[in-house]
Length: 328
Image (cartoon, rainbow, N blue to C red; front, side, top):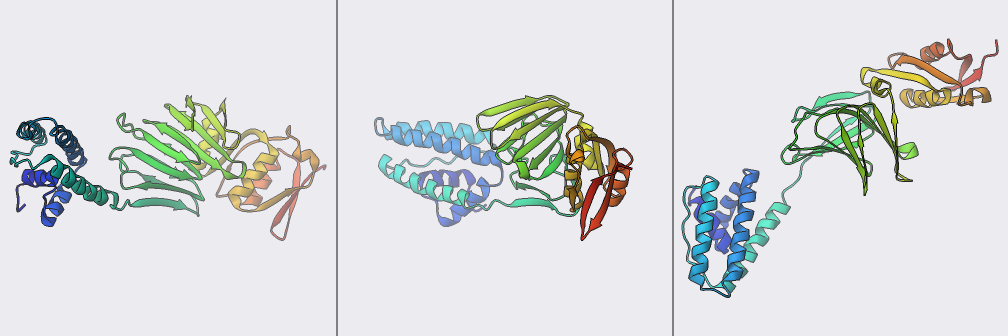
């Protein structure tokens, strides 16, 4: 570097840095996060001393400032600090304001790079830089920016995903979904946003998570499922079998005593078909289904399996499946 770095930093604080010095300073400032933190501390102390020079001897103010900056520079590994002659307090205040304006503008104008995982044909598995494993379901997306893992671990989810979060007590993992946040340190859980009924369904497999939306929050335990209604703002927590809600990771549809109508709705969503139930008996809530189906099966193969436990028959008319109750 052409000029001594500590001398350049001092000239920036004094508002006397040349364009070349300012570029060198900017390069140093963005090399590491602790460089930015150090400069904020030095600037804060400098500002305090500039203000204080209105009431005390300017030379004494400079001596105090120089001593403190030398101490902080040594802590950051900068070997020595070149003393400057302190200008008049009013001039310093104006020059510092100008320098800080350009520094703030430089930082503000840095582009934030965003990364997006998007699935529209089956699920996708991938690892984040911190070791967190994420399985993203069909028709879902996950977005994060290039600050991930530095000071925080934050992602934004649309759709459904299963998270196996790597433990890092110093950096909570935050999932934003809809208008809610899920905050964890290291755990496994499933999140699904159901836009049709404005619900967010979170199922905890192990560990613990904090679910928050606005002023409302809830801490979940393993085996619990939280259903958040984004319209009424209500939480509903129930004990469930997590396997039923995470089977999709292995390409399965797993159900236990669910209403037949719910199964039909899930099949429509999973296979992209329209199914119409033409018998009132099948619409009753006490008509339930238990079973495990593979997504590798086609819709007709699955209907044949269902027909073994629920008396149904069906036909395909112009791509629409019509289901009737089978009295035979």
